[in-house]
Image 1 (cartoon, rainbow, N blue to C red):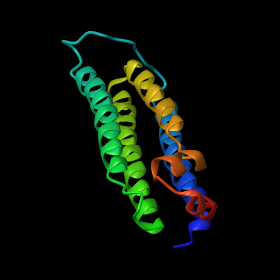
Image 2: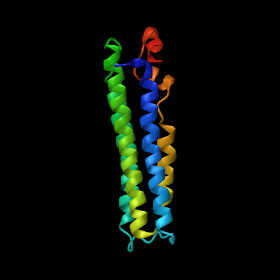
Image 3: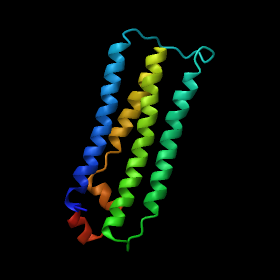
Image 4: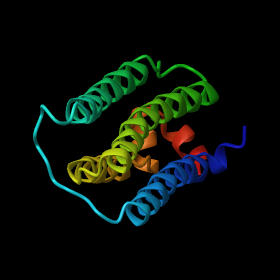
Amino acid sequence: MDQNSFTSRISIIHMALFSGQLILLAVMLYLKASYTVSLDIQDDIYIFLVLGLAVASYMLGNYLYKARISSIIPSESFDVKLNSFRSAAILRMALIEAATLFAIIAYFFNGNFLFILVAFIMLIYFFMIKPSRPIIQQEAKLNASESKQLG
């Protein structure tokens, strides 16, 4: 594994997933020119589904991320630490992306702008969890020599 490009590769993965969500959001907003804002629960079961999935994805994603990060042993090899971090980060990003995409699709079928607001909040959170070099160093429990190798 070329460790020197690990930070840039995981950043590219993050930005690719983020861009895909933004593109889908833009396309759905363009295709669905009219919208409503409704909180009428009797009319729209999607309100429960979208909000429930968003909250569940956030909570489960953070729980699984922390569980995988806490399982990293400082004495493990550099490659094992990076692979553990990458799998934890991608799992959390995938869960958040799933909730965002579901909210966007629900908006397209339903026209309730509340779903776009949920998707937008999830996109902001998704952007905020972007892995950076200091985060990788801390979360993957890298020592000084491994931090230099990270690139």
